[in-house]
Length: 332
Image (cartoon, rainbow, N blue to C red; front, top):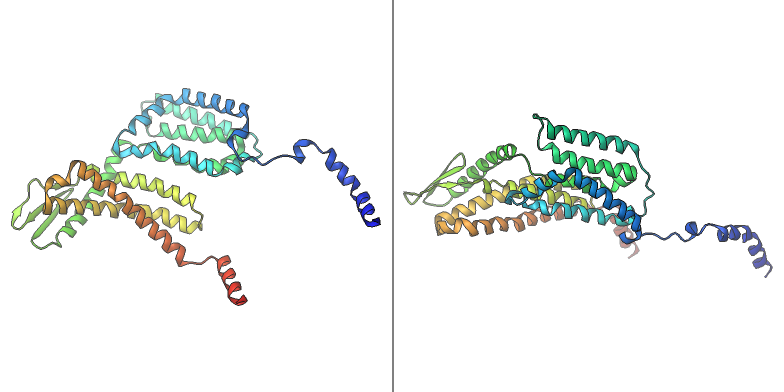
């Protein structure tokens, strides 16, 4: 009893201070839902979002219209992925102690001035207009939330770059060498068939089968260049490297692997199309069948990517896992 009374007396001042502490310090709950931000936060977001759209509405509409092109149809998914990335960091973002950073205001002014320069100037480069729009969004986040908020939002914001279509001239200049590579490799594989001779000339494959020249020759069109698969798969590669926890070197390897995997899958597509065209019937190598074959390359690409990810995970054992396994073994 004496010990209890002494303990109570010694804890008295501390207990009194805890009881007199402000309610917000003693009962502050950890936020877990976006609704807990409060109405004033959403009003602020709506106002800033409205001003942002008013300033960049022409650019936003131009980019969204380009997404109707099959080469850039993945653009519709990019903003959704960005929102998903932010939601993945929800608990950390909701419980941040943010404060404005006025360096962000300087960046906002610079980005807006750069955007208008590219819009008004005859020598302006059109591709930089949507890029400066994305940079402005990042500057707004820095200005309102500081570096602590940028830490958890820089990738979702930067990921929006994958939704911006490349300028046509650069896109075409990239597709031509990829079409030529696909034609050359496909012709090499077609020559493995007895009685079949294939010669690649640029993006065209001349085929002689059983002594008869097939007309028209196989043409590796722009749709078969692999750029669609490459751009979409590169964006998804960044997403998967970000979402799956693994050492940074493994993430870099997985990200770099998206390019050769996409090129390989496109070569498979062109080669299979050639076999169908020659050995089955030309009508099954075009139109709907051609598009379905292109979609069939996505599971192949993801399968190869998953196989590489599994190999990297199995190749090395984390040190903590090895220690735990050693302890369990010794205990038995």
